[in-house]
Image (cartoon, rainbow, N blue to C red; front, side, top):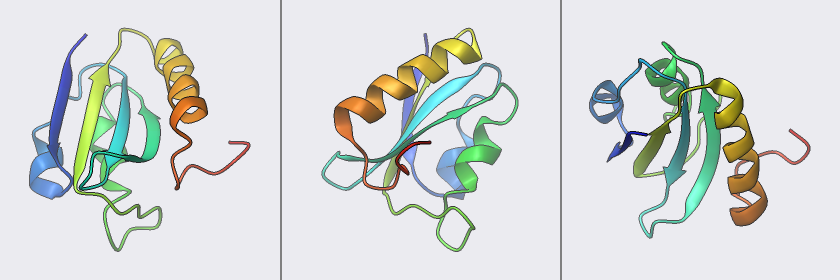
Length: 95
């Protein structure tokens, strides 16, 4: 499916496609995953924006990478694998 990496700011997030469910990773300057999450179709940009500085679920990062999938359950399975493998600093345990 489609993959895209943009700057982690309002302008970059606005460039992301919103027409399919997606797995997203908020990345550090060095390319390490700080947070991995899932967003439903039609809510990708909104969900990622919730992690911008000053927001309730803020996560530090410089880039955000998404991968669109055809179904939300596929995205959730992939998210679990990413979290287990890379153990992002800002993902809460047991979530």
